[in-house]
Length: 50
Image (cartoon, rainbow, N blue to C red):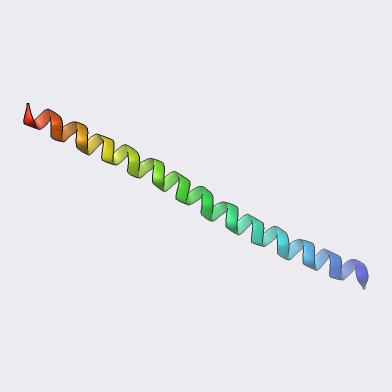
């Protein structure tokens, strides 16, 4: 029984950590994409003014 409890707790912790890391990774990728999009918009706006 002790091994089963330990395995269950380990599995739940693994799923929780995976979920947190996946959410962080997606936010990081979205932030990079937003920075790139903003850079492109500013660059095109400056080119349009000239």
